Image 1 (cartoon, rainbow, N blue to C red):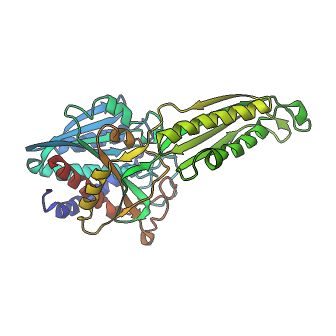
Image 2 (cartoon, helix red, strand yellow):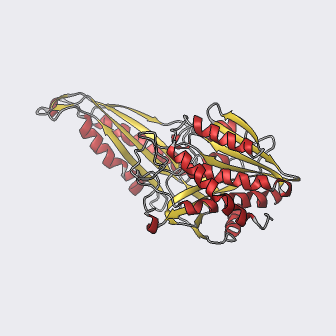
Image 3 (cartoon, rainbow, N blue to C red):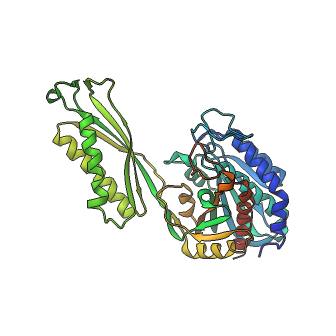
Length: 396
């Protein structure tokens, strides 16, 4: 059991958690560029007398290790650190100073909450059974190799081996103070693709002398939607979206080629393999039908499905229900993606949400919006939840 006074102590350090979050929000750093953030994290962990290793995974990953005063299990707690290439449109005194870069997904809050949990745990290290590992991870927004995989390859889940692993995410769609949880698959595998259609350009008045890549692109986009409606069981969560088209220069010139960028989102490996196969097959068929050549590439090393251990999630839900001022709810699956999924492939655990939606404070915009705003009152709940999970699962 965790110490009874943690809820009092988290309120005592709440100003520090908020201050750290504001510092990070004002100084956001993009994927694989989290140099300042990494140093801030390492310095704060060292000040708590927690063992620190930096440069994990070849970039800016930070590992903190806190050994308890008693024998027990090993728990990993993770926060991601990178920001997004978004221009902030929220008028805050700590608005981003880095033009075109914003913590629009809330990773600044994740770092601040995990540092808060580390402070709570460090004060009670003699009461702690086992070991807690703190993973401060770069490059979650990458979508491919990301930051979790390099850290895992660097050995953070071993020596000592992690028994349970937990991560949280601030959630703009859930009411402030609500913990959102779900056992089983909770987030999708994101397979990005790039299709280049190679035609033959010419004058817009003589299309019969060309192989028009824009026309072929239009046919292909419509046909790809048939995968979900006709080729894959419609009750299976699945999305294919073409999100970018680049082609052409003028109103009367049919270009030589067109490039399409898109994403496939699936919740199981069988559907994932089938969807990628069908995207490639339909692309080939339509291009050949109109005499065009094509190139298709899927982004390598895309994140797997984020899968929460169901028994662990039940236990986590019951534990979070004990935090006063909060509530818990079972949430729907999401077709967004998370490279925390890689940690969950190595140890049982749970990825959960902390709601921040508060209309009175104008915290109503979703994550990734240029107007995304966080209700800072919930940061103490996130920090407290992580600390409680560490105490509970090191003893289990």
